[in-house]
Amino acid sequence: MRLLKAAVAAVALAMGTSAFADTIDIKFSHVVAENTPKGQMALKFKELAEERLPGMVNVSVYPNSQLFNDDKVLEAMLLGDVQLAAPSLSKFEKYTPQYLVFDLPFLFKDMAAVDRFQKSKEGRDLLNAMESKGLIGLGYLHNGMKQLSANDPLRTPADAKGKKFRIQESNVLAAQFEAVGGTPLKKPFSEVFTLMQTKAIDGSENPWSNIYSKKFHEVQSHITESNHGVLDYLVVTSAEFWNGLDSDVRSELTAALDEAVAYGNEIAAKQAESDRQAIIDSGRSQVLQLTDAERQQWVDAMKPVWAKFEHEIGKELIEAALAANQ
Image (cartoon, rainbow, N blue to C red):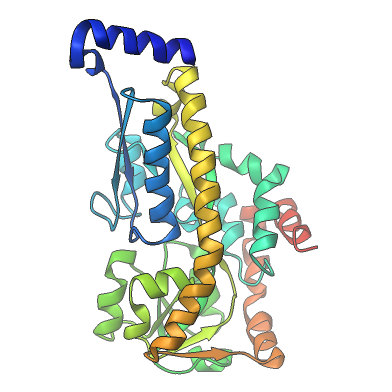
């Protein structure tokens, strides 16, 4: 790699800035704010990649759905219009049903269990599950456990009956809310605040950082601390772009991304707690804590969803995820 950098630098001195005419442009598109774990990870990757490969790569980060929302970004990636993205794991259902394992309600007891599963052989193998469809997973980025928000208190599954909940593009999440009598609506993340504000939806599910950074707590009167699922992201690229890179460049970008993801995950853990407290301190939304009996009602109502999708996801994969709880 040093020889590669030295060669580029030597050519630059001899030929001027035109030496960088073939600079690799990397567009990194995501849908959340820059002050979220994903937003900070993307900026850290830009910093590290350009530092490791000076003049050889140029990383442009586009937050808040400036380029594409998560429903369009993968199509754009396959067309070469964007090189990196980090959609939530729910967005990959059309490419492989295996990632639906992360949407199963009450599968993981906490983020430590999620992390153990993602680092396991089964979790690492999942990164390559879509290569035949033109996509390669590069790493998992945490956001956190999901909470339920609504305009009324949700203490038991009966409280969700008849309510409209915004969900991501996931049939598992649709089944999850149908199991408690709710109506799931698949809508882009960029529209959620307006949908809440206009009462077009009654509630949603999000980690603390999404709720706080997007000010959902200002337009939802109650948040139930359910920790019923996980909302993590997959840093993804196109196989054509990634496999077309020089191996030395790919190695440096991998190292930069691994470091950036670790940085983002560290922020996610801290931010989940600080954003939760900030929401409580704001007084705009009441945070409800479930009793053990109330929580068990939610578990009993939603757990049948596992069996419904076992054939698509794979029994062995679900069992590997369960084993991570121990």
